[in-house]
Length: 514
Ligand code: KIV
Ligand code: ZN
Image 1: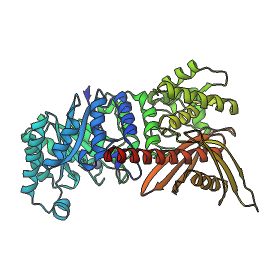
Image 2 (image 1 turned 60 degrees about the vertical axis):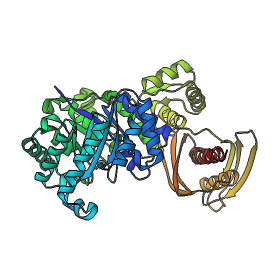
Image 3 (image 1 turned 180 degrees about the vertical axis):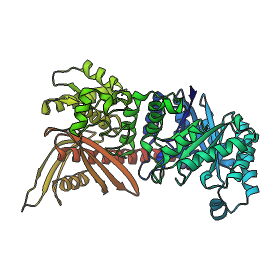
Image 4 (image 1 turned 90 degrees about the vertical axis):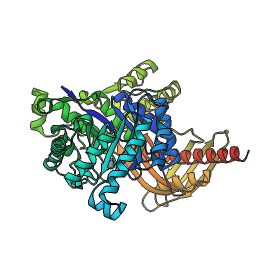
């Protein structure tokens, strides 16, 4: 069976989703998870875009082993040189250069004639090849480019040394039959096409990114660019888990394989959702909470007779373990460590200790602790900013006809405790105001959501908040069986992130002055 190269762009195109920005530690963690998942290429970022992007690509290139690390560059010398600087320490590295080719982009954005586009593309591929042997070229908006001009560009960049030619449907305009036909056209009309891998990069504006990518594979494309949970610019990119499981589940049709370790799909999806704050819709294929839930009586009856009646994949195949009862209050640290490892998380000793303490508290309140409960605890702890502030105690009062109030006591990292009280629109608002008063950090609440982690009246509520501080969106998340407490901790999580970032900035400014 032929192999499909999985090129993951969660850290580049995925990070372009509104509100999905990740810090360096989070990017490294996602990159390591992607390596473990078995992706072939990680597009780690766009090094020229910002110093933060550059540092993230460089750190991933230096520290993440296994996949090829790619960095994006426009067709100019500065971008390409900067991409190379960021990538040079990787064992396997790829420079990915792009330039739009469609008439719309040529006329309205680039103001360049066809000849100029070809010249710039060829020059840039040659410059990138001067640095490394693995160079990808993307004619941006390829799906809306005249097929013959696209074939000309592709032929010339292959002659110039491109080893992968990526055909993006940048605006998600294509439909499967047409997109497959475009790949067929290139295979027929580009001299030397066999010297490069044909890749596709589909956006999901019409909900067709996966379908278009699969149609291209059927016509001979052998690399798919995709993201975990399908996140990305606007409506997102082709979803990695969906395209991979389509190829795997329907190998009778595609006769292709990937190197993805499918049981790592669900944990990776959870991780990306947790660090980006982008929740996965319940009915999302492969990794949504309902993807393997059977509600209708007829279906449940069929499932009892044989799972193949209503299931084309097993939940375990993609790493779903959410219905499993795991541990109780008498379970020890070893059992917890083993279960966490089975679920696919890797915690260091300090993180494990924190999760163990949270687990014990939870097990006291809740008889049955499920995998989903553990996930919520782990996710709360793994991305934790060092806690400059922690909750000592709080009290709220609310009800019809009374003024909602809260009194909060916080401890600062130096051990001093502070108390404040406030009124609010409700008890949660009053808690948030009290926390703002104590910490002196005022924010604007942009989003607040709560979801039940498992079922039952003792289920944990997981709260996510997005707060805006000095134009920057910061996320916080926490879970508890008490949603007011979960809200307070989620809000404080975000405040701690802001406080840590501010103290780092003050330190950096001090170091500069020194
Ligand atoms: O959508 C797009 O065209 C891109 C390119 C940079 C590959 O993201
Ligand atoms: Zn894109």
